[in-house]
Amino acid sequence: MKDRIIKSRRDIPSVEKLASDSVIIDASTDLARPLIVEIIRLSIDSFKKSIGREFKPISYDSFRQKIISDIDLMKIKKIGRVINGAGILVHTNLGRAPLSEALFDKIKNHITGYGNLEFDVATGKRGKRGILAERYLAIISEAEAGTIVNNNAAALFIILNTLANRRKVVISRGELVQI
Image (tube, rainbow, N blue to C red; front, side, top):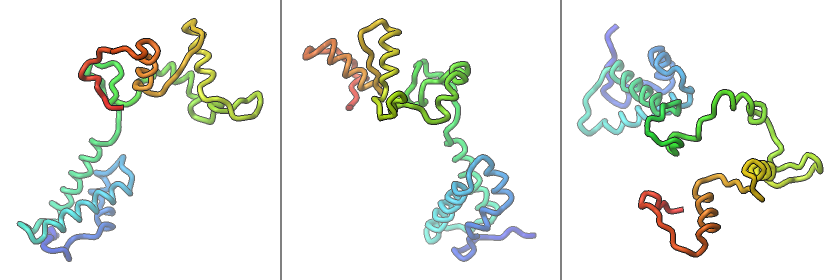
């Protein structure tokens, strides 16, 4: 069978026909159908915009290959595991700090269900978030108290407020981040 030529808007296959194409289905493993449908829609929209300006008819196979290229590009962009070769121990662009499998096995039951983060089990009432962690931090560090914050900017602010209160602090140009 001779390959169809797409010469006009009327010749563009439907989203459903393209989404049901076995070659596209085979190329789109690991991606959810709604994402594939969106990629197909974007490809069709892009193709429609090209009609009227420097438009050249293309074959169905070429059009399908363009969609498959877009699918392959989406697979590359999908969030996945990478190797940190930057030399920065906790690289903010690479997500959270990695956990060892041994540590993950120990905490797995706590993080895969509900926990008493802000709930006082003894009284049955709302508790204070982080109170246990702060207590444990104080014990481990042999300090009077412990404070936990969820980002580096907050930690830096607390440290500077405590240790350099109302005094000048030298800071590198790279650390001048607007908070």
